[in-house]
Amino acid sequence: MRALLSHRLVPVVAMAAIVVLLPLLFSSAYYYRVAALVFVFALASIGLNLLMGFAGQVSLGHAGFMGIGAYAVAIGPTHLGVASWLSFVIGAALSALVAFVVGRPILRLKGHYLAVATLGFGLLLAIVFTNEARFTGGPDGMAVPRLVLFGSSVWGAQSWYWIIAASFLVGAVLALNLIESPTGRALRAIHDSEVAARVLGVDVAKAKLAVFVVSAIYASVAGSYLALLNGHVTPDVSGFLRSIELVAMVVLGGMGSIAGSLVGAALLVVLPQTLTFLHDYEHIALGLIVMAVMVFLRAGIVPTLARALDLRRA
Image (cartoon, rainbow, N blue to C red):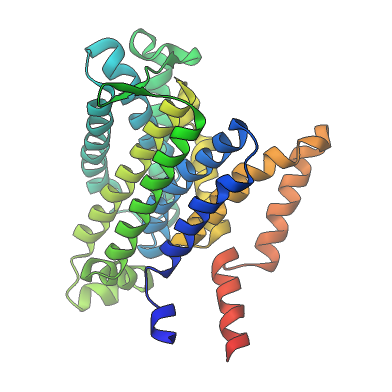
């Protein structure tokens, strides 16, 4: 029984149960939309968690890859006549290519130097999306055509809820399999000490580049879903504040925890919706709650609670 409970897919089963049972609490399409947004950002957070929580590499410009995915599903059908689903795939491939090209030089940096380099990359993409108004619509953004699958268009918050939630679960399974693979063990070794990992025969540069590319694909897919869900995209999708928001989701939920990615995303997506009754004090309350979480749950919500549960069992 204990071996069954410790299986790596147990968190996925729990999250799948949440996906199935949540709609029982929804009374309108608004709740489906909020839940879909949670899974969008949880998907992006999984990719960033692989990079930060397991490989120990900081990225402050990860929203740039969300921007690539978002504008791919907008520009492809609008200007190039490419089907939305194909633009979706092209956006993920383009993000992987950009991550491969950019990651080779900047992943040689460490600490705050790496953070500043990724920050510059994100700002650069945001500037491009803002200035290239002929293709992107400039600061006002552009409309995103509906996704067409098997001859019918996908629309409505309820449909997007199931599609995005299913994609999140697939992404979680793939991430857990990666973590338990030799590559995942190499990433954990790099997180603890790059020097020790190199001594043990780990190709540090190759492993860091690989996880950077994978995390970019996760962010691109999330960005495409966000654009398709909203039906509109602006340069804010790749802005600095969006990147900081993704980092906050990973840290609050728990670095090195796939379930923590979902919890962190839910916290920062749902809380602003529930605190609207405070009006002018909404942001103050949100900031205080985030500070309290980090003070009392320093390892993140999920790892801290899991550790407390293990101690109670012991």
